[in-house]
Image (tube, rainbow, N blue to C red; front, side, top):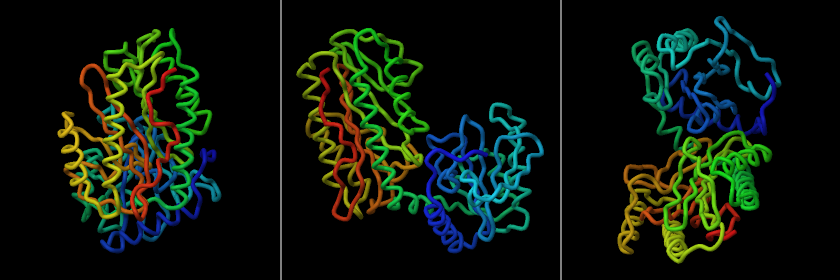
Length: 388
């Protein structure tokens, strides 16, 4: 296998494996099982192996307490490979098994489970990461044949704290996204379509070292809301005076995700749009004032909703701030149902917004939680409506 784009260091992988083995020792586990099918929200697999899943193809990783990992991935029947030493794409992996299974072909889903059960022979107590997200047949088989223990909570708490190497990569991702937005501002003009803009943004990101991500946004005339939507809906052609809110949520070097959102106007913004942006900018500042090590996300969420209501704005009903890293969305969520407190070393996106029909008011930036509170904004893009 070829080497990967911007591989994480051996030292960083060893740090993660040490953390995982300590969690396993705490729970008396012989092995730890995880699976992903994509790399937008499939970060456990990449956190352990530095290689993501892709294209909906399942990638199952078995991490052992006392021997190298086994990876089960898309491949020919009978694939059984012992990776060569020194290859960056298989560090810590002692065996790669392959099977041509597809989640769109129901009878093939069991093939991964059969290989998994085979490599777990001799194990008694097995841990799982997000077992409810695995195929039903896989989780059911593990529960039937082993003492299965869900260690997601413990691993999530460790994964949410970024190492110095990860923090350096996070800063690189923020700079990459700033550059993408700057080049989009030079590219956007009357006559191009929403899809032209997001395709251009994706090409810039890939040129700068991004592997994956999304670009959400639809243009609209001034006075109508410019909302986030994926490429399937990006059909409109921009005209003079239109505006477009764009979310750039792509991975940077090392595969870590951040996100930035700003609104661009092909001309002059009206007072309503400008005023709405100032409101969400102030809402972002209010949330940041509450973010410090030990803070309870549920309390921050309640305070945000109270702040919005006091100004005649709607409370959040989805999610307006959350952790990021190998997942576009990872814990902690700033929401009523989150139990993980904030801690130094976490990376959070903060993106309050509201839609009143005339505008979709939004701002999005990332921050690190430091000893005394949030860091300076990781993005350097000015917090304003861009009148182009």
